[in-house]
Length: 172
Image (cartoon, rainbow, N blue to C red; front, side):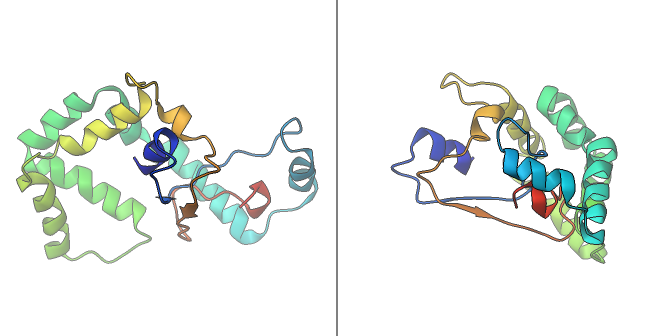
């Protein structure tokens, strides 16, 4: 959301902060020096593990995003109608996305309760994925918010077991 604010209102946006930094390998046409470094520099063991984690997420862990980005109401009804569905949906993400944190039953139930008993309900959390991938009346879409906005300072959160971990030679 803040990236969209920075794109539409850069004079009013003090800064943006994001996690899940996405980076593609450098291309020869856009950044030949970085592409050359990428081509000749071997990956460290940590970078290889990061790429494995990234590939796991892209191939095995990102189906939730596709569902929420295309049919948010369908999963929204299931999460609203069934506390067991909500528990399973959320526990899977808490397990896969939090670096093996040892969740207690109370912590899990707190997370589920926040979604289940909020005024907006569990379905509200799904809609943002749809909105982020479909252009609005202003023309801002997921692809547009991926642009560099040079007038707005950007902070990046980096977690060692993030879902997508680009190697250092990709520009990090």
